[in-house]
Image (cartoon, rainbow, N blue to C red; front, side, top):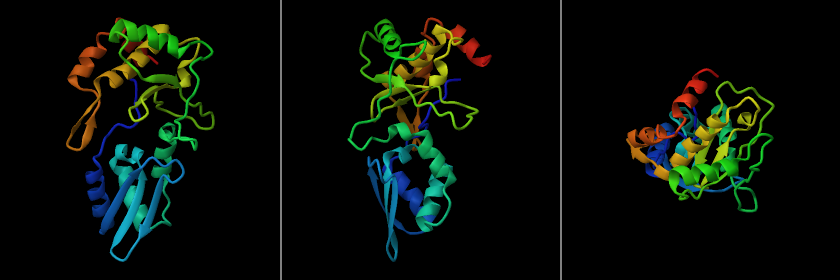
Length: 222
């Protein structure tokens, strides 16, 4: 299956409540787009002042729990937080204020060319998102890769470079791109404080991809 980063969406007020429950103190929470201070804490007698990068609005329960533990004791180790930041580092702006831009031309596929064809065929040219290859990380083995992601805050689709290989069928990489374009087109809604990414309408539209069945079969075999 195509897997995605940032699977949830917490409202800032809900995140504040979770941190207060985890720390046992009042929390003043500020959400930022700071590229150098992703997580910072100041403590008072009965309260904490916490500044968090907006990516943490998309963190799961275990990561938020570790954030709360870190707020209480800054000497604690933070393996889950570090992993979450690494996996979503493309959402961190560079120091010049501009989001990271990778290239569109791979060894075998040009993402912009494929994007433009899909945009005209399925969306009448309405999708305005940019597209690029994600960063290649050769230092660690990833069992379950994120093949594609859509970052709404920056309006960027990123495709994992593992798909830029000779043995990847053209229809399959087009399917991955189409999947992410649907996220851009349909948006999302919140249910019980969490973002619903794959609604029934999303699944209906996904099946409109002309080679959907073939892509799904190839997906399950690899």
